[in-house]
Length: 192
Ligand SMILES: [Zn+2]
Image: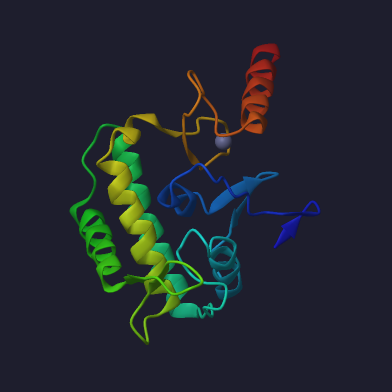
């Protein structure tokens, strides 16, 4: 999971979980790196976001090939919704239905308050990926139906596939690195 000696997962604590999951792939040196398209990659992602998913340190992360298929379907549907939002368009009905149905499953979790502090309890036998899908889809619905949606952007830098929230006025890029790459690309286009 590391390239250039660093972890390829760049956690952005201020982004909604839905934006983070939709951004679970990125280009690195022109190569698309998908962080969740293998069981190992998906497990690593879930482990890294465990606390934001409301999962205890002790909750086992169990994912297999079928969960990867689910993860990619959920991410594709989320991406359709975020694309539609930033393009002021209508998303495919199937994508909206998938996200809505997955989000409903957060209702299966109950909050309890043992001495160690509040925690979410899921029914026995709920799969790790069902928890992940429920949480990221619920996050998407909160984002899409809140004023925060007006701050959602798709990074316009070359070879960037990430969404981000423009938390600073006039923020154009998902990261300073993308801003630099876009400036370099503009410069070399001009001098060609
Ligand atoms: Zn970017």
